[in-house]
Length: 474
Image 1 (cartoon, rainbow, N blue to C red):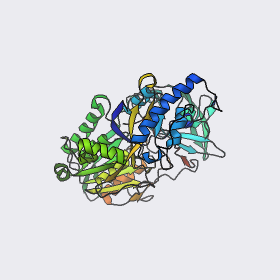
Image 2 (image 1 turned 45 degrees about the vertical axis):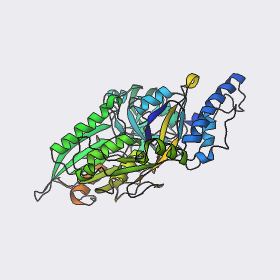
Image 3 (image 1 turned 135 degrees about the horizontal axis):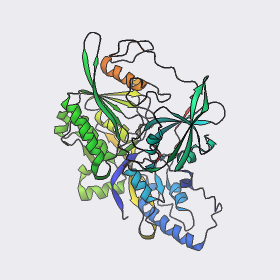
Image 4 (image 1 turned 60 degrees about the vertical axis):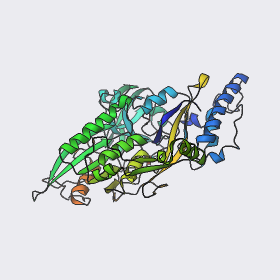
């Protein structure tokens, strides 16, 4: 089992595409050459060896020994148990590494997919755009609607392939008489390496009520749990929390609406900056990792029981926050959820939004060997729980205040017309949501919240699509 990368992933790394799940269009009957059979045999043997030892449900693997003909992606899928929606395989390990390091080949925009109109029409609503990315340079922005790519209207059969095309001519949509129509605006995009700094926004602001009461709020929009090469993204977190501490922030809004997860150690770093100092100095338990019996025995024998316990660690950038408010959606998964439940036993933790994704497991990255080192697998190897033993939240984390983001609003994340953000501010200041026409905290005039646009139908969150598309996280 060589080339196991020494980090554990808790990202929503659903299958990359349909090809990963065994559709062999060129050889539908598995009529392959003897050379290909031998190659498959080598890769499948490597898969079996790793899965039979590392896989969380490894007691199901022994009877599924590799064959000498099945395609490796088919074989890998055949080993996955019904509960496992996340284990992942690729034959492009280099691209996977780039994704994990937060330097993907990408257009640089984050999508939500919605049905609209009649039939199977799908639109892409842009959640955010990374600065200096191809999308940013083309002028794409939060809230834009994409209805066609490369001359094809987007639907529920082609949206995956169109969205992931490395060269795109996109057509923006516009709402006319409560219907989404193609506009005359087109943009040309070509994927390239994007600096996907997960700290997309951070600021400190004061909310002044009419009676003169002042509440200081910190805001952090955090998109990925990745450290980046040479820990460059950790430095961005450190700068943000040094600013929060210097300005005396005690109430912090953390925006995880589009964060599908990442590395446990980055979640540990973020949580250690948020948690009250007393818990930090005590080295209190953040989360515990549970592996299968084989891995548990191996780790215990070589490293002792403490290897399973992640504790808060003093990294010199703790802001001693007293109240934290997490903005979440169905897209918030894994390390996002881990961070929330890891902090809950120790401080005032409020969740605003809708139920999160519900991923309480973690993966490890294993690279193939020798002539097949282009292969990589990310099997589920653990479940995590917080200090109170909470885990297995299959339906996601339940919000304390329900706010449904039916479509992205606001010119940018944390803008005064970003409706979920406005609600989070009011919860932090007043302890409640606001209604249409009610005075917004700190505002001089009442403001109507926009109604849910009827043109936006059901949201698609397909298991076959990587969360954040190309942006796969450590």
